[in-house]
Image (cartoon, rainbow, N blue to C red; front, side):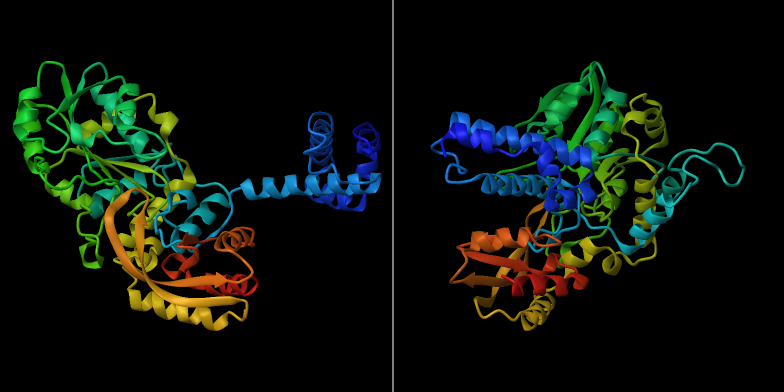
Length: 466
């Protein structure tokens, strides 16, 4: 068939809509949606005939029925891709505990149940059950944070970048922010701290050098335009060697003496000392509060182990000003986030964080524990085409937290004579649920540290099908 004949042989939309396979798609996706995607498919095929008749992958199709089947295949593929783009559960077998691309910290069972209850009907988001009057959003969580951490007040926004922006916009708009040159970081996704500061309406005044900044550098930089001193924790990078930076207590003291707010962007938000599990340099929120830091912010979905949020703690006078900022409404969180955060903080208050928060439990799992689980998975896999081995390796924290920390682990290594590592990785991604693994040295590697125990059966079944 010539390209012109093939163009005339393309099926009509009405004819395609009557096909059995298309009818099944209509039952799931709706007639209008299927019709619109069919138009896209036929336009795509026409363009290939007209502009790339020799190189088109449909050039070899010999008759109208083959063209019709190709149109059906492309239509189905469009809906598969759309489904894959939707937010869904995946099995994280990468060994990256706080995997930003995979949603960072998985929620605890208590947080999931709290979200379900809040979402199942109405809730007292801004209603005071004691007085029967309008209440304040987040007042219950604020009380929990005060009790747990001893802070004066708290505010919650939708992420830590928003917390930094809102704080600087409230306290430093039109003035200067003093920040060490070594702390002007990029925080992920091309969002850079200098850009956030600039959008807040403040101006950066760089202090010291990249590797060495002294307290005297801050003291000498203070002038009539100074509105705030900012400390940014290097949670996603390390400067080593010939380095120096003032302590939190020293900066807090200087700020008090000069009557200037001091704000720490703490980042990861650890409430537990993680040194015992191989993460020695991650400061806790309590450490900052004990150093008399008057205002600090951290993430909810990193080492805290909760949902995405930016939590601001500090002196009531500063928090009250932040809450009155008109932009607070733009950054506020909803009932589901408050519910999950309350359940997460309650886990710390009940001293159950080590066992009930999935991210914390994964971080503290020993190499021997991971190896034992890996062997259990291997016993379930019946696949003579695969070569399965246990190898020593390392897991990482991820999420821009503790970049220098590595956690010894045992990896399941998969090689095959009939599939490459790339092909096996792709097949696992197409699994239901998708399984995300990693490739090193032409081996597909699976790390059980980030696989929950109730996902082991699904993982083993998927490996057996490779």
